[in-house]
Amino acid sequence: MDEQLATADDFDLIIDEQQKEKSAIKFFSFTLATSIVFWLWAMLNTFIVDKGFDLGIVSFLTVIFSSSLFLGKCCSSHTLNFTTHLFVAINYGLGAVFGFQSANKRNFTVYCTICSMGWLLSAFKARKLLAKSSSS
Image (cartoon, rainbow, N blue to C red; front, side, top):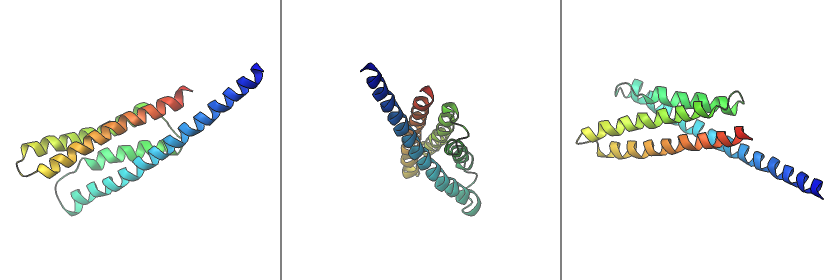
């Protein structure tokens, strides 16, 4: 009887790990797609619209890199993914600070503040997902 329970518990652990893996794949696929869109936007702002250098070119590229490594099964470092998401959050935070200093940048300030908080949450979500999958 104990052997059957142990087998059932093992099966539950396998199912749980598969669900965690699927959640991580969905999350990093979403962050990869989002980062590509905003990286292209940063490129457009820098080279076509000529608004000056947009740090999003670098920060979003780091998320593209770390998400691609995870999805390609090359690396699942929660430190790398946390750091790259945090870099984007800091970049948006800098934009919010710049916006606060300009009287006519209220919409930009709100946008940067919301995005900074979103990417900060995303950084902790990435860390949590990868910590769970690497601890088992």
